[in-house]
Amino acid sequence: QVQLAESGGGLVQPGGSLRLACEASGDIFNLVLMGWYRQGPGKERELVATASNKGDTKYADSVKDRFTISRDNAKNTAYLQMNSLKPEDTAVYYCNVRVWTTEARLTVWGQGTPVTVSS
Image (cartoon, rainbow, N blue to C red; front, side, top):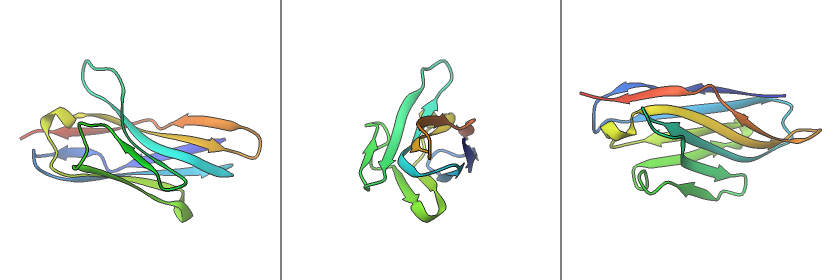
């Protein structure tokens, strides 16, 4: 089993910054991919950013040049630095990992952390 602990969400004014963290724990052999998705009010869940264990990153067009995903592999933790936040970034942000345990390959979701961008 693999568990995810997310932190860092909250209320921020437009133009502000937040940093989200997602720590994975449990039976981890290889964290292949770590990423963030979000679901805004009345919207479908969408990809925000991913980072592979090889250092490759991918971003949604809407967050490029504003958000940065990074990983601390020693801590099994991914971060999402969000700058120049806009009201349309308001959403629940979910951590997602694709991980090999000692027994199987799993896709695991976090419980979500809310981000509200409002003045």
